[in-house]
Length: 164
View 1: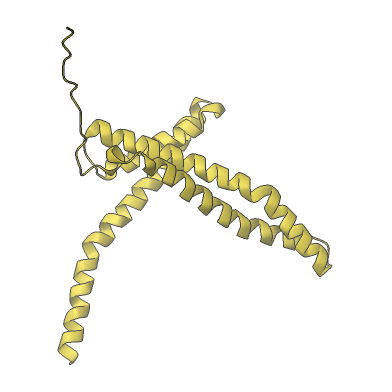
View 2: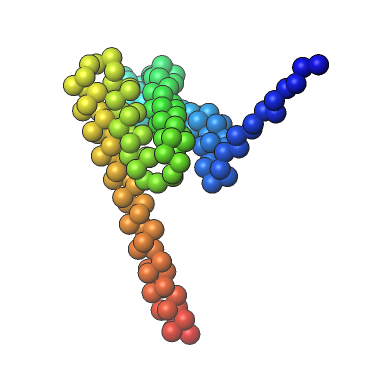
């Protein structure tokens, strides 16, 4: 008779959303595509409408044609950025076993560098810096708002309570 060793199952910690749900990456892909496609629709409709001949009918046709040709490509570009960012952020959360703003900042840098690989090392460094700075600003604003909002709400509650 063959004796089998029990299989050890590794259960990820419950606090780490990326480890327990790889569907976050798929969700971020879809959300980024949708955001890019909707934004592209607005921008390219306006551009197509402005650059068309003066007839209202031709302007509408030109605007819709412009949207149909260009908005999906912009949505795809947003999806690639969102998917790469989510993948690198989830990977960093798994590797570091921490969920903090540094993961987002490093993910922004990695995403910028990875998406600029075809342009060469100088472009990779430049895009990594841009990604890190942008995500640093976003995370910094989030931290500032998180720390300021309780004091603002307390002042408003005090003003509302004192007026009555």
